[in-house]
Image 1 (cartoon, rainbow, N blue to C red):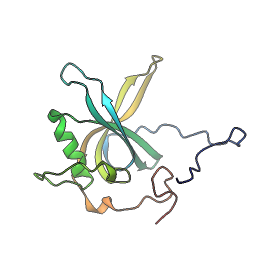
Image 2: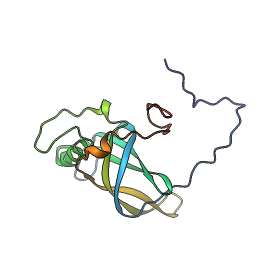
Image 3: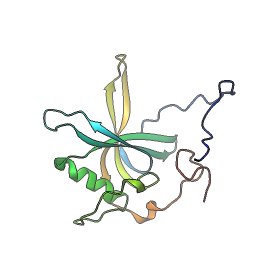
Length: 160
């Protein structure tokens, strides 16, 4: 089992205050998938309970790294959104049938149109977040460009 250097001891020194959440202006951005979680969609008026994939996208920009989270609900009427994601990261072509390879999602790069969205948090405060409006078709020039020194990616710091 690999050693996890992120585990802290009770008496460790702390200094990282975190970074301010970056809300991006609307536009097209290159992202790297930094996390993938399997989960369950609880159901709604139109969709029964079913599986969902929650993706965290890291987006490099002038203000640092912004994040966006997107749920891909595994339900046939939403298959188009899943297909557009897999096309975006180069795992699918238009009209092609493929088995979704979730093992190759973390670290994958693609482009998406991002829009800020207003919401009210659980304390009643007005906030903004980055929403994926749509995934853009595969661009080989961004797909294999490594992101150096991103500790959230599996290959760690500068493994290229």
